[in-house]
Image (cartoon, rainbow, N blue to C red; front, side):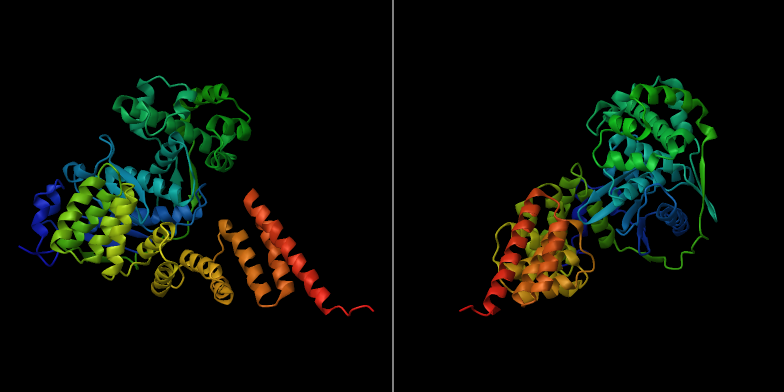
Length: 489
């Protein structure tokens, strides 16, 4: 028996270990703007309420928070109706939600969107914001920040952070504080993060410490500096000493005194008038759209990715030439570190007409790394630019390939159209532009680009490359002068 559409093979999900809720007839809806996409089985009114909450939070984080972030990457939020509906996707038995980052999307999953659980929505949204801010934070600070901003209170023109979290306060009152050395060393694999009895104490103390560092007058002024220091790789204990001039023992003593009185410290911010949701679009999801969206959520984490792979494999049997399914299979394999399988799936997606530039770009990079013929890789990057003319990463990669083929004019034209020159590109960018200018006969421009390459070198290897480039340019200049100098008798 053969199936030709996703609808024809809908029943295969009954044999997969996917949530039974997926196969029920409940209506899911999609609410989306340019920055947030909310998929939910809740009512439209409940969906709009939590959508407004997240939009308000986005305005706050972009304008007033200590994180200094512009949220360019959209986030996809799944809002379930109940504990049972959320169960197949749950990663932590005690959490009301979770955040996931994957190569092609950022996800938030919420057990429900009851008003009493809005804190969970803000907690997970903060994780997304931290990721978008490019901060690399230790576990205690990541969770402490998420808890701090989960208390965010938003009204028409004001935001307040720092309100007490009753659950965390209850834990602090019934548990003695762990020493800070232990707290700061907790990772995702530590017992304090995996055992429920220890987890609650870890969360509560991480929140209290972050609350103190960000809101207590003796710490708050330097909190942004502390965030940047820790994110840059400075150990938390060293950063506390560098930024605040205090040892762990001193900070620990301050915390013991602080947390019983922390209700006194909140921070308020003036916000511009709330924007109405005029750009909000709402549409019902078909069964097929719902299934594929939920499979994306499963695929985004190693613990649930095998289930996504099984489901998509079944779907692919009934629709063997469907580029969307092949593409999703590729991302699942990628998340499972099965690189060769991912490349194979992406190849079939391209062959069957995928028009998603992100996926085609990823496949092109994989083919380049695998030593595929240059003509093939060039064609893939060109396809990306056809679909997305502002895709700078593809333009830069294509310029490198054209330069290596001595297509200097083409390489220079491609580089000149970059919207943004990333820091890690600068030395290579100026070096290539120098050679291209030299080839076109503009010696002065070539020398200027060579100087910029030297100034932008970030590593010893780049510095050596830039120095050699300058020597070469100087030699070429002397050669040119010699060729035009009149001969002496």
